[in-house]
Each structure stands twice: as C-alpha cells, then as structure tokens.
Amino acid sequence: MTMATQTVTNHRRMLLSRLLDARAETDALFRTVRPEAMYDRPIAERHRIVFYVGHLEAFDWNLLSEPCGLASSHPEFDRLFAFGIDPVGGGLPADQPHDWPRLEIVNQYREGIRQALDRALGTEPGDDWDDGAGSFGQLLHIAIEHRLMHAETLAYMFHQLPFERKTGAAAARVHQGGPFTPEGVRVPAGRATLGLSRDSRLFGWDNEFEAHLTDVREFTIDKYKVTNGQFLRFIEDGGYDDRSLWTEAGWDWRAAQGISHPAFWVRRGNTWAYRSMFEEIPLPPDWPAYTSHAEASAYARWTGKRLPTEAQWHRAAYGTPGGREREYPWGDEPPAAGGHATYDPTPVSACALAASAFGVEGLLANGWEWTATQFAPFPGFRPNASYPGYSAPFFDARHYVLKGGSVRTAACMLRPSFRNWFQPHYQYVYAGFRCASD
Image (cartoon, rainbow, N blue to C red; front, top):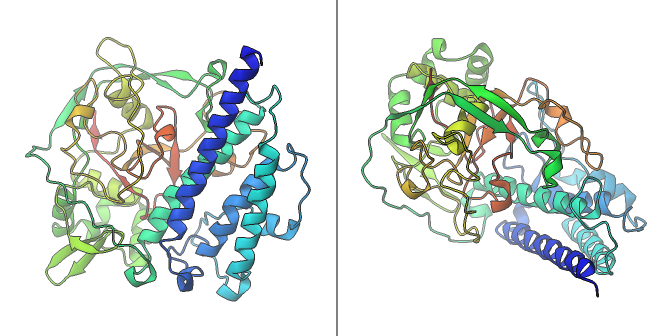
C-alpha cells in the first residue's frame, strides 16, 4: 500500500468513526424520550419527534445513496423525512400523530438505511475521499455535522418535554461561580477575518465562504454574558411591558403569545425556577440568560446598549492587540474533546482561563450568542452543490446570526467561521447574549 493510499484509508476510517459516534449520540438522545411521547411536538414550530427518527437517516440516504450506487427501497419515506421546517409569518404545522407512520416502521426504515450505507461505505475507497468540493469526504463531513447539529436541536427540543415524558435523572449541575462584577471591555479598532478561504480545503458550510476582511471600529462589549440575575432586574423593572424597548414585530409577538419571561424560566409563587432537562431548580442567578433575539434586543435597549454585530463579536473573540487572529479565544489549542454529560451552562465567571486576548470571557461552549447581524451571504457565496438548500432559503432578513456554541455544540463546530442562525422570536435555543456599545 502506497503512502497516499494509506493516507486516504486513514482519512476514511476517521470519517466513518465520526459518523458512528454521531449516530450513537442521537440514538442516546432518542432513548431519553418515553415511547408514548415519540409523537409529541415539544416546540410548536417544529415537527413531531418521530419525524427526526426518520429524518437523520433519510438525509444521509438522500445525500449518499447515489454516489454509493444504491437504489432506494422506500422512496416515499425518503421524501417524507427529507426536510425539517422553520415556519415564518406565524404559520405553524397542523399535522396529527396519526398522519405519521408507526414508530416500528420508521425504525425499520432507519435500520435498513444504516445497513445499506454501512455496507457501501465499508468498501475500499477511491481517490475522492479528500475534503475538496464535491468529494466523497466532503459528503461525509456534511452528513456528520448535519447529524451533530440535530443532536443539539433534539436536546433543546426534549428540554421542553414534560419531565414525565422523559427517562433519565441527570441532575442539573449547579457550579458555584466566583464573585464577579459586570463590566465592559474596550476592543480597539482593527480587522476581523470572517469566513473560510476555499483555498484552505477545510470543510465548511456554504455560508462560511468566502473569507474576507472587515474593518471594525473601536467598541465596548460586555466582559460576561448577561446573567439570569441581570435579566431578572429587567423583568422586575417592567421590561416586558415597555413598548419603547421592543421592535414593532417583537412587541406584536410578545403581546400575541403572552410572552413575559424566558422559555427556560418557570414562575413558582413569588420566586423563579429554572427548567433543566429532568428537574426544576432554583433559578441560578449567575448562569447566562437563555432568551430569544427579540428579548435580548429589548434588554440591550433597556441598558442603553445594543447587541454586537457578527464582526464585532468575532473581533472580541479572536482578535489580538497586535493584529493576529487566534484559532480560539484562548489561543490556538482546540477545545478538549469530550462527551455531552450535561444540558446546562456554567456560571458566566467560570471561564476565566478561556478569555480572549482582550479579556472577554465565556465566548465558546457556554451558550450561543445572538448578534445584531441578519443572516446573509458573504461576498463570493456559492450554494453547496450537494446541499443547495442549506443556507440560501434563509437569506430572507428574518434570521439573525448566532456565534459561539453551547454545552451541546460539537467541538468541530466551534471553529471561528461557523455561523448559526434563527428567527428573532425563537426562544428555545441554548442561546444567551452580551451587550455592546460604540
């Protein structure tokens, strides 16, 4: 075996191992749902849980079957489970449980696809297992990261299920954070390199290309994410009832839906509780406040500030006083790999060793962070030929960029170029925010 062939073989083994690990993670998440709850819809804007059992394999099949030379044995399911939903304009799905196939049939479909793909993927590789555009290696990257994204989506979906509809007893981690004082950090003017270069041959989604420099003026940004304790003061000051703090669309949404607090909070008499995955706990005042973009924006206006732009967030996270950009806020060493043993964040002051060069703390893996930037293509954007619908349908001025990652975000997606996006009225993501000012 030549050195080149050995390299391709090792790369193939690495990708297939990652795919199996991703399958194991989503399988474990589905096991937290009781069988009688598999047709529940924990979040009104999303499909019923049973859809996702079929979707993950249908996506892999629709992506990989043709390159593998495989013929479908169930084209109806390939179409039924092909696409998720992200309804805009207030429209919500109205399907009923009986509209979906029986769970045992969906499980048979899932297992049949896995067996067929695993047989095909186990053959000796050709020369197209690298990570270049259109290569088979890139298709595997797409399948792996798509599944890992859904692992996080499933976690926050299942978070909204009633406790009795789930199995498991993972206690919420209530780490004690050190004393801290909310303060702003001045970030000097400089440049931010947004996106990935196609010449790098690194894997990225289509919205991550093309790399470009952006000039960023001097600004100030919160050293820490906004905490539950800080957000509670906004509520107590009548922030949800002050129309001047909200956009017109945000106010209409708040009023129509009766929104008066974050989705992870529960009122218990005169106190607040936090809804963890398997239990309620007293509201941790030093955890980041998980909110929608609309709520975060209203809070920022209440403080006389605003949300940072994507470029500002990037500069605060990866920039340095000397102009060089780091791979991660703390330096160039990647985060330690590990399992997802928790669903909860840590106190905002518990991440001092992960501070950026400018002293901004907790930028990665303790909750996504909303930005003021609408999700839009970078200059030179080209839809991914293998998944053209990944980004382009959401360049609609109705979605906002999030950066940073949560405790459920896979390490491979903590890269600087990765961009997440959601509608401004979506409350369920593990997403917080920090404020900025000029």
